[in-house]
Length: 346
Picture 1 (cartoon, rainbow, N blue to C red):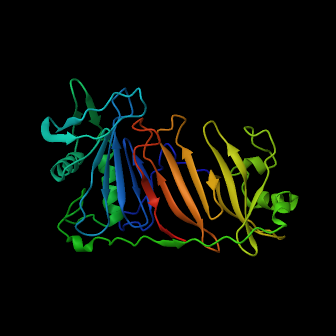
Picture 2: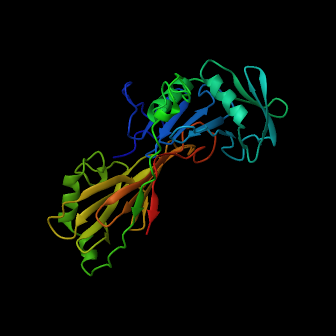
């Protein structure tokens, strides 16, 4: 299925009584959150979306488990060569109070522990958070949505009511906090050698019909009976040998104004083909790894990425991430905010 949360991450409705166990994205106003399968969470805040405020973003990263501090890199907008050149030094100011100097490299700096603590305290209430550069340069970080996002982060990591919570702090020991989960290891299998008959499968009308039957038309309109209005020419199938009886089949599925997606299926190498869909948003593959990169909008200032790896039986999701909100901070997006991480072995 096409990723629907490229520009706006859909809010997740989570039960209040227990921390969720699955990774998720969550967005509220000018802040967005992504937590991954190790329970590490990353919250990114930006300038207000309305008006012509200078682009700025901060990324609050916290690993799971007791006693974990928050890391807080900050990035001043530098979308293209026409963006104002960021200064080498700037001052962080919160509610009119000077919080000290920021040493910037390429428009980025990491907040000190004291600056991070002051920022986190400010985000629990209405605050004015400003980075002051040379002359009249000002970057104002919005606090709208921060409290909801940080509350969701605490909830996911099981910190609500503990001494280490960012929101809704309590007296419970941090020993009750959910532990970090290990990074899963995915061992990629060696592909089987190509067989003489594999090329003939690319012309198989029966295989094409099997793909169509196994895939909703909206997910792969190019092979549906109605077709895709953005794709006028017939799309050929591509077949890659995976194992002694399985092949990877791919074809262009859909095209939009600034993205296109290829479908990938694992199928038997003879009828009944029984194809199993991996994704219809792929953009590249080398046989054992399928990759996807989709822009959040035509400007290319945000996006979504994912990878799947062949383990000998199926394609396993090995990574998935967004680059945060579309706020003109950086080409390609300001950050990497994963929901799925893994360690690959060959």
